[in-house]
Length: 492
Image (cartoon, rainbow, N blue to C red; front, side, top):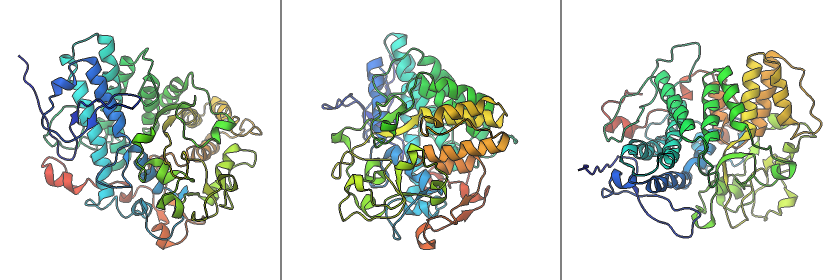
């Protein structure tokens, strides 16, 4: 007779089987409980899929009673707030200002320091329930493989995000034996020590390789679910971070196969529809589940009426804007005047030069918009960068395939070597503006933060203008709550 196991994890949420009506899918609602066994969650492939749907739903829930902490979309904003390409235009505090000013991630007691740790380890914990419950499941193996493959993908993604934030950067020229983050692959309440950065990445690849095998042939119902292309795309991201150019290029090419790049109409449509062919992974948010004031659309759209969008609309770094060709459709994502006449913004909306209109919510009163986590364009950029670093002449062809769909006047680059790498990176900054990559890109590239000479205002607004490459400031401190509760964690 099986022993019914129950788990409660401090700082995370146990999953409870709940059927929710009126939604596209049934899903697991994440609520604190001591009464749900892991065996119930993993009894059948259908129950396991309810668990996966619960993880999907957790990507756009509010955490820590914080309006600025609504799921993965908020953490995308965190990463861009700490870069130089997304400019905050207000001179006093709103959500995410502590990150913009670089004064919370090095405060181990700060809420915004703790939120990523809590969020990603909750995903890991809930994924582990499903992964470790495979032997308990009663059903066809092909059906079991689908939730297991998605759980493995989630576990790898969460570990990858954590190690980039809470550990010093990966350096392909070293052994990477420095402290990473705890690798958690079992359902346990016991605090674990930090694994080396190298070991963390090894586990990430093991999970993603197994996930791709499990998801072979899986046709997902929508793009909130993780299929094989997403697992391959994550491997491309991870290899890029590790400076393994050959594997990064290979997996990026595999991941984007079959996806069609966005048309001009789609590029200017507001980035709010995850059914568009280029989107590989995203959250499709329904109206009833939208966090009115905390959702990604309430913080990053130009047209939704919240205190953030009305008073602190995001602008593009003027130095980056100046590098966008006049014939490039992506230039229309930004208005140098800040007036946005086509949007008919109410008079209460503050107007600042170079604000964006890339992201648009459903309306002034409705923050609903789908959230992009992975697009085929990113895969082209990964492949082009990796091939350029390998001095592979096909790098220019890959870049042409992407940029020519954005700029009809673009011609195949004659740059080679570092000059071509630099050109790819400029297009990466333009293409992925506001999608949560810039801080992590600066860190992986070992580049300094430099906000000087652009439109970042003054020290009151931006806090810092320069951070040297490689300094300790690039690494989040382990949250004090974890240090206090886990005797095995290494101190910061």
